[in-house]
Length: 234
Ligand SMILES: Nc1ncnc2c1ncn2[C@@H]1O[C@H](COP(=O)(O)OP(=O)(O)O)[C@@H](O)[C@H]1O
Ligand SMILES: [Mg+2]
Image (cartoon, rainbow, N blue to C red; front, top):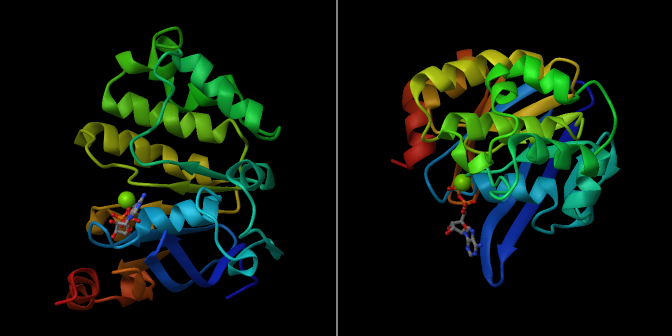
């Protein structure tokens, strides 16, 4: 692999005394889309939160463009160019669509993403720009959450449960937007509960099981039985 953009090495994560991740080593090459799969509770969100600085981890256990970022706060990680689209959208309910998007810009950097660029990517958000974010459908909220992350002009983007609970037609729209989102960036990690979809969009797949990497590989080279075993531990 060429020099990775993002690499975790031996990353552990804890909630008080409970250890949720055990020595996770995952590397993302420039431009790669890595899909992370695994059962509920496997540690996928914890992994993304640890990379994003939401949960502290050892300084050297996450490197981004060669720099150790494991000890940085979420705001600092965002300013380094890594944005998280959290599970459950987490929009500000009292704010409009546009206000939610503008907040993303305030925390981040300048770059190619602007309100106009987000509205071109997801035209439905332009139509609803003045509406409260709570009035949006689940799919529109996900688009707004993605837009908010993009407004920080990240080089690298983390999506937690990108399609969970969304209507098939919306999932199609979001995945159709993915190449434009990733192009021009350095890479992405997508947590996706639909394994088939994960295999079809990703350059590489990582499966977690009970806080450990149980399988990683290129989709074409992984067989279904191995994935099932890595996923369920059967
Ligand atoms: N805030 C928390 N406090 C304590 N334990 C947590 C917390 N969040 C997650 N966990 C535990 O950490 C493990 C991994 O959870 P999580 O990363 O959310 O898994 P996934 O995203 O794969 O469903 C689970 O055992 C879960 O119960
Ligand atoms: Mg999760």
